[in-house]
Amino acid sequence: MTIHDAIKQEVDGNDTVLFMKGTPQMPMCGFSGQVVQILDYLGVPYKGVNVLANDEIRQGIKEFSNWPTIPQLYVKGEFVGGCDIIREMFQSGELSTHFNDQGIPCKSVEGA
Image 1: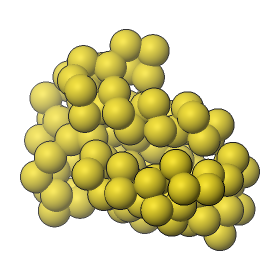
Image 2: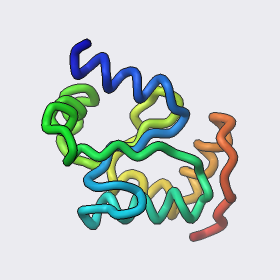
Image 3: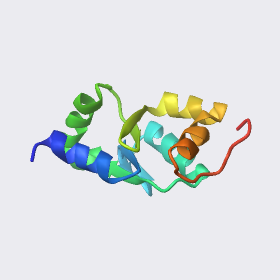
């Protein structure tokens, strides 16, 4: 199995996956921590994948998404974005709408 196959398996096998530095319980960078806070605030169930535990995943996820930075959020197999995009979507209410549209329960946020 290639690293791309392994990443695809994670993305396809979980409704919401966050490729991040560290774990949801212990983020190892501020950007990963911000996305964890947003997902926890919304009450969205998700799987965190620690890219620091595996250099192949750390490099492979950047190629997989064609996105140069980590964290990266995937919802229902689709790349949503990194920290800045997630934060903007959260603040505008678009993120909770996106989760609801995908059938993933979360708190709605009015003018967060």
